[in-house]
Length: 86
Image 1 (cartoon, rainbow, N blue to C red):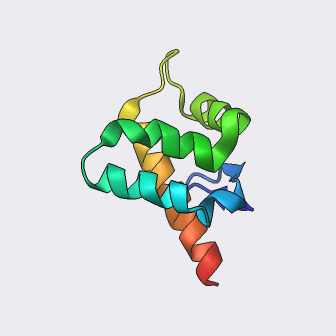
Image 2: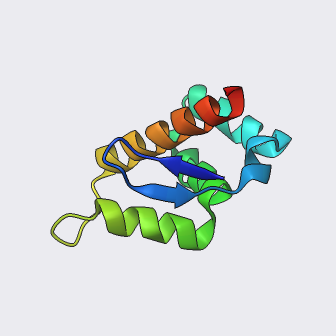
């Protein structure tokens, strides 16, 4: 399954992750304030290669801005939810 950011960047997601109970647990823990788990959720959803592609897309001056990464992950999750509901 592909997800798309507002800027047109497309990325493959691991569709099985969206139906995985442990992925849901990680998301719930993030909602409960364990923000460090955002990295784990990203790895589960995108895989190692996908996460690297996303970081390379977001990278500015050699750095990956945290807020840009979080925003992109949120867009990806919204895109996934839209695809699953259509």
